Structure formats: C-alpha cells, structure tokens
Length: 409
Image: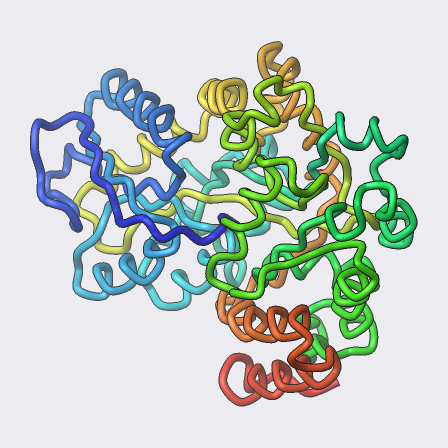
C-alpha cells in the first residue's frame, strides 16, 4: 500500500527515444511498463529495467504513473484493449483485475514454475481462485517511526502498547507524542491490535463493526482525547500533514512504511539517518501486508517479452539491488542473504516486522473494503461520529454494495 499522492502522471522512457503515453506499443519486442513507485524510487526501477532490456534482447518503455491514478487508469485502458504490457500493481488490486479478465493467468508460464523462494504472504497476494496472476515485487509493513533524540531527551523508550504510549506522552509534550494519520490503511493496525478485521473470508462474514474492531478504532480516538496524539482535520491532506509534523520535529512519532524513509532522511531532523528509529507498531502482529506485484495485461502483444522482463525484474539479483539502494523489502528469501541487503539498516529494521504481518482479504473487493473505512475513520478521529455508529454504517455499505454475499455478524 502506498499513501495517496496528488501529483500528475509523469512519463519516463527506456529503450526508445519518444513515445505516446497510455498504451502498449503493439511491438512484440517492446514492453511498456507502468511503474507506480514514487519519485525517490523510479530512477532505480528505470535503471534496472534498462539493464533487463539490454541483456534480454527486447526494448522497454517505462511510464511512471501516480499511484493514486494507476488502478482506474489501467482498468479504463485495459478494458479498451490498451494500456501497459506490465503493471506494477498494489497487492490489493490483483484479485480484482484477475476477476475482471484484465490480467493474464500466469499459471502455465515460467513465472509460476518455481515460487518456493518467495515469502508466503506476498506470494498469497498473487493468487485468485487457485491460479497465479502476478509475481511479487516488494513487500512492506507499517512500523512506528520515532525521533531518537526526542525520546532520549524525554527519557522514554518506544512504546510497545497503546497504553504505554499514553503513559509516556506527557514527557513528549502531550499530543506532540504521535501523529495519527486518518487514512484508512493506517486504521488497520488499531483494528488488528484488538482482534478486529474488515471481513472473515472463510465464513463470508462482515466483521468491520465487531466489538473488537470498534474497540480498536476507539483506542485511536481515546489517544487523541487523552492528548497523547493528534490528527489532521482534513482527510485528503492527512498524510502530507503527518510527514511535515514529523520532519519538522513537531511530533516525536508516526506510523509509516519503508517507502517513506528516503523522504524523511532528506529533512533536517533526520539528516543523520541514525536519528530515525524504527520499531514495531504497538501491539503484536498488527501491521497489514503491503507491497506490489508485477502483472501482465490480458491481450498484450508483447507477452513473451513481458514474461522475460518480469523474470528479470523479480530475480534475486535485482531484488537485492532494489533493497540495498532503496531500503525496500524483497519478496525473495534469497535476496536477504546478499551482504548489501543484510547491511541496509531499513531492511534490517523492517524484516522481522514483515514476517509478523496480518493477512489481508485477498478478494476482488479488497480495495473497495478500504474506501468506506476512509470516511468513517476520519469522522471517528475528528469526533464527528461514535466508533460503533460509524462502523455500523461501513458494515451496511459492505453488505449493500461491496460484498453483498457476506452476512452481517
């Protein structure tokens, strides 16, 4: 999962001198790749893509597309027989795109022939109805980021529970202790730490308004009411506001993912990267599985080249390069054995957290489950609605328009 951004799509070119944006080239020897990473990462992916093209005997054109626009843009293009040959897909999109017939079944290709090296949780995100539709690229988890100097000055350690956070907050300036991002993905650790969830796919039951889920989100609101944390009053800019508060030293802690480290360390507060502490989110195993997969568009004219391209991009060697240079987490176990990866402090800090993540529902409605939660979470934190009432509304939305085949708890 990547935070929302508002920048427009940018275009990068690899293997050709010029090209239009938005579709496969129609050339079986050229792969159009939509890269949905951020600006801090795209240069590395583009460089590796060029290396793959050079050694593989095909061309690659990289189009860097804003993450928050990519899913809808891809669906619109692919439904018309256009779009990229390869998409860097959020793990939560794969089942939806597979059900819609917009990505290829890779089960009988070399991409599904040997998957034993992949970590179990990322690999599970590539499946739909027993078939393989994707190849894991990177995985991630949420962690508690903290300003080591501020915590040391206050004489406190990173909290292991939400109760510990409440107890140390006065020493950190009350609500300056933690900024709670009110985006829906960041609500999940609070749900999970109290035994809650969105749905139970095994019993096909809606659980978002269970007592455990309500207690989880109420815990976040209680931290704000106790002046142990703060949040943004406007939902669309919450993530940006959180980053600004942390990089300015206004707050001591935030919850974020490995993709954010490079941006934080560009700030004055963390000009010395050693000042950026990374610890588990309070609670055990409370982070949702995140990350990205490679998928190939149904109907691509460059399927053979695309398979070779994905093989190359997802190889142990290239996953290790990405991890060593960007601090992103490999999905191949063997990549962690690379000395440069093992020595990367971000990977070292996140690796045990990624091994203790909470499974997400790998169903086509995955993304739609989060959308109603976005509004509800922001309203709960702002004090506009009680947690129970807000989550009851989310449950009703789930049953009427998201997962109508699921029963209320």
